[in-house]
Length: 131
Image 1: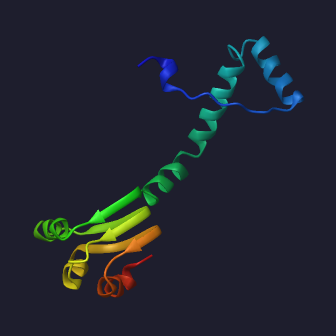
Image 2 (image 1 turned 30 degrees about the vertical axis):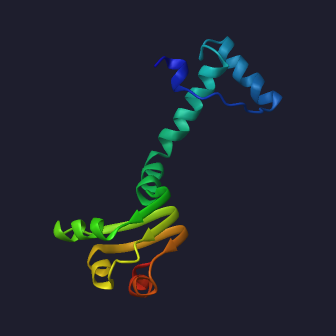
């Protein structure tokens, strides 16, 4: 994959004074061209906010779309002595045949931005763990 295929083209509107200052810095040799200046400015801003970006990504790691939890999957989680955190942006479903005790033993928390579907008993049992 070539360098052009790893980038995305964007368009910005810039005031004429700001553009003139960019052009001056390019002319004076600080940057190869306008694009070099803009890339450098963006990278500088991203680097200055790196900690905030990393925290947000870690905090907001969610499945995007649909995620279904079957009884078999949750049985495997329980057998492994583990738990899951349901974090979905979209639709999260728990199979109708999942008993309340299995849900409580395997689901640590539920955070769904969108829709959450489970049996009434499982929904009630997980309510204290729902963010």
